[in-house]
Amino acid sequence: MLKKIVLPAVALAIGLSVSNVYAAQHLGDVQPFKVEGQIYTNGDLFVADFGDLYGGLYKTNTPGYDADTDKGAFGAGNWLQMQGLGSLKFWNGSAWSNSVPNGEYVEIEDALGSIMTIGTSGVTNPFGVIDELNASGDLHSHLKMSIKDASNTLAGNVGAYWIDVTILETAAFGSTPVSTASAPFSIIFNRGLAAIDFDNAVSAVTAVPVPGAVWLFGSALAGLVAAGRKRSIGVSV
Image (cartoon, rainbow, N blue to C red; front, side, top):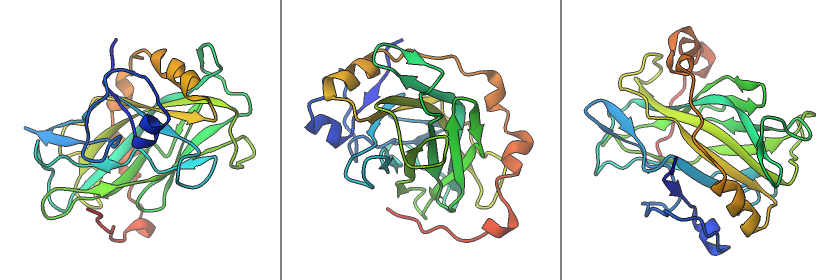
């Protein structure tokens, strides 16, 4: 299945030759928007680099999330959230695998400081707040993401790492979606590969069916909002 691939500026700078590059407000960012109660995004595959201009070899804050209000705004004051899906996959130089060399996992820190992890065994704390939407139903936010090994140390074997996520909208401090979640999309992280080798990894990505169970928010989402986390989020636009 051909995917809409959205590349960050750093990927273009190193000459990544993947086709189907789509223009963005902030090149490479996920650009969600809402039409008639359904959330959409500007692509279904985004690429990033552990070792870009943020945080050194094992951290990144791209792609960010930049709502496209021209196509459809969200509800003022609501929260835009992400849900991690499935499990982490690793590119070993020739194929994607469900195992990683040193127990690596991707860690994502949300706007409230809560930590989501995505490893080969699945997702822990699968819901995270991207940010609070401003009075125009808009936001632009970047979350801290890192790669760690089984000892919880910043580290990552050379290769590429693949995660799947979706976006949903809730009321502030709420646990019930107020719109239909986006279709799942993929983020492919480079960890030390040469441009042509990362290009090969991205080109090898194919659509992976997402089990229906991941769309059942239920009590898992209800646990998102703990009393100790009830603080305001600074909207960045």
